[in-house]
Amino acid sequence: MVQSPTKPLPKKLHIKTFGCQMNAYDSERMAEALQPAGFELTDDQSDADLVILNTCHIREKAAEKVYSELGRVRLTKEARKARGRDTMVAVAGCVAQAEGEEIIARAPVVDIVVGPQSLHRLADLVAERASTGKRLVETEFPAQDKFAALPLRATGKRQVSAFVTVQEGCDKFCTFCVVPYTRGAEYSRGPAEIVAEVERLAARGVREITLLGQNVNAYHGDGPDGGAWTLAGLLRRLAEIPAIERLRFTTSHPRDMDEDLIALFGDEKKLMPYLHLPFQAGSDRILAAMNRKHTAEEYEALIERVRAARPDLALSTDIIVGFPGETDADFEETLALARRVRFAQAFSFKYSARPGTPAASLEAQVPEAVKKERLAMVQALLEESRHAFDRDTVGRRLAVLFEGKGRKPGQIAGRSPYLQAVHVEGPELLIGHIAEVDIQAAGPNSLTGVMKSGFEWREPVQAAG
Ligand code: SAM
Ligand code: SF4
Image 1 (cartoon, rainbow, N blue to C red):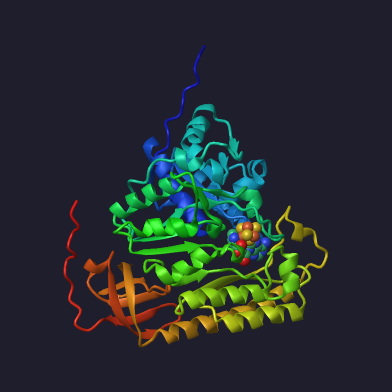
Image 2: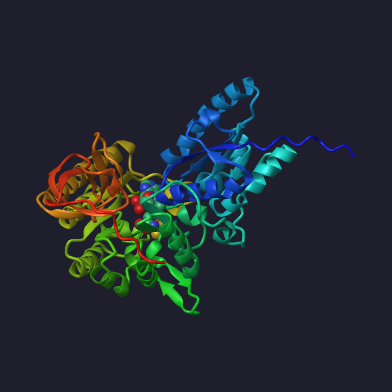
């Protein structure tokens, strides 16, 4: 039998990431998974033999962005073809999961469609596409654990702060949300595997870890001791790793904030005083229609408990405006709640009907113009609240973890415990370290300050072993 000649495998990889931090984490893992097959990352799409779009399906606008990007990728692919170079195109992430075959039909430029639970199979899919010429769709939720199948995180660029996904999927079925359909049922990684990953990151110079999950505080990993670990237990264990100086986690659901986790904000110095806790809407009627399973009063009572454990807590949230049936009076309750809580940070969105979710078929859809107006109102309030929080830190001395160079020559930039960006004049040697900064001014998006007076840089003493 005559074998058809197999194409040589492509070697340059470009990944464009849309959406949340969990996608940013998945993109890193995809690059690592493709490394053994000889792929190197490039920032230049036109140089890439393999282009991956890691997509987001949470709102219609996010999903549509993928198709406009595919239009651009098609032009690059044609230009490269004219130069005798092939380009393979893969669509990964939640649009891939939700639309599968539809992407293949709608966008002939796409070679591979791979869902978020199958990304460890990418190298095989690329090889299969190259050898068979068949366009491939892999959107099953395979029983095999993708985390166990992915290579260990031992290489990559130097980072000070890293994300680690510890929980995926969701069983809560809020009526507006596609996550339970695109990411599947709730799943927690085992603590031993997470600890090993964080230890490897620490050995590479990472000083801050943000644990990620669609409902990260629902975490319940099977421990080596046979018991189920909670998020608080996992954070406590990670805090024992000496080189890890800061811990954060996101996104939390109000229903899953247990007492142990609340207490940890008071007990564990490495846990930063910052909590992202979406409330979505201030009206109990809308919260019930959203299937959030908490009232506005319960949300505020919860915040009071976390603030009692950590009085300087910075709070962040997500808000949806224009959920079906939301009246002006309901929306006023959202504004009132936001005013009372005084968020340090917030993300607000116009409700976007997602196919297949219960809220999409409700009759009382809110007109686009009303949603737009409400969004502008809530964003003005949230911006004011963010600036007020930033202004309150002026005059304070904050511990800043430096992550890179600043905007201006001679400046370095980092994050305060409250996740504010801080710019200061200082030596680049401080990148990767924490130093105290006297905050002098709050700009539109960042703080500026000076190193604590008398500050003198000394090389840290290396721990033995
Ligand atoms: N699990 C988190 C929680 O329960 O709060 C939220 C995770 S979701 C991936 C991120 C945010 O996207 C949500 O908090 C919500 O504000 C927003 N979102 C989700 N579905 C949406 C929709 N259909 N329209 C507008 N915003 C939406
Ligand atoms: Fe979506 Fe969060 Fe609700 Fe789960 S809890 S369905 S991820 S909004």
